[in-house]
Amino acid sequence: MQFEVQNGSFSYHNSTRTILKNVNFDISSGEILCVLGSNGVGKTTLLKCMMGLQKWNSGETLLDGKDIAEIPIKELWKRISYVPQAKNSVFSFSALDMVTMGRSAHLGMFRQPTKKDEEVAIQAMEDCGILWLKDKLCTQMSGGELQMVLIARSLATHPEMLVLDEPESNLDFKNQLIILNLIQKLAQEKNICAIVNTHFPAHAMKIGTKALILNKHSQPLFGLTDEIINEENMRKTFSVQVQIHDFDYASRHYRSVEPLYIVEEVS
Image (cartoon, rainbow, N blue to C red; front, side):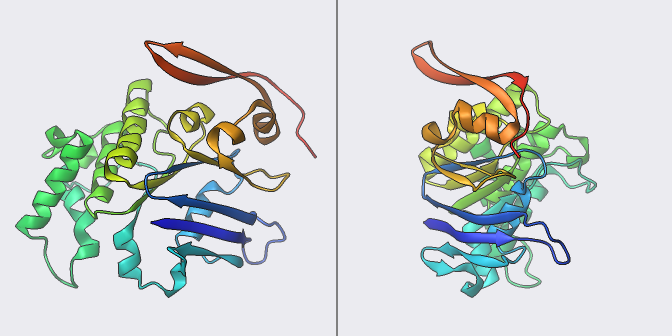
């Protein structure tokens, strides 16, 4: 799969402010693109525009070289799966029922899930390591558990690309690592590409092969993660001076980001 945004720009009707301007990036099977930016810069809007949920004012999204506007909706959502931010569920479905709903893109109108669909859902839960949750009600889950269920539901569609909106937000350290490790595993073992919105530069450096930085004051920055996420770009993006540390532990290499102090915003 090759997924591209070319010169994407977006502003809301009756607004003089351009939310997104000249966004360009590409991602292929097995790659992970992490999207960074301060609050209100348009990260979630980017996801919606690139998937066609909102229309670009100018520019386009291409899937294997074809404008997604020309791809039938059902076919598009077989290939791309969206994982929104986990909220407390108001539906008293079991985890297995919730994941089985992910098969809807493969079902005809009024068709009920089959035994095969349930088997696919169970496999998706096994891939996520949460089969033990299958009978638990979503209304009784923690944020981390519900996030894993939503990812499993997306996997049940057998997508080529996952789009995740801040999947590790509001989770403790352990659950953050579980989510990040799972995304990386899916890219490496199932050749799925992923686009991940995140507030954490360290998370982007941990799993991202590419990075896209959205900034209110300058053009978007896109490229290889190690080249894009640096101290200067973090300062300009978040108005915070940071220090990036490289270190080895237990024969593995790590990078961390330490925020030092607030700096004046770039005008």
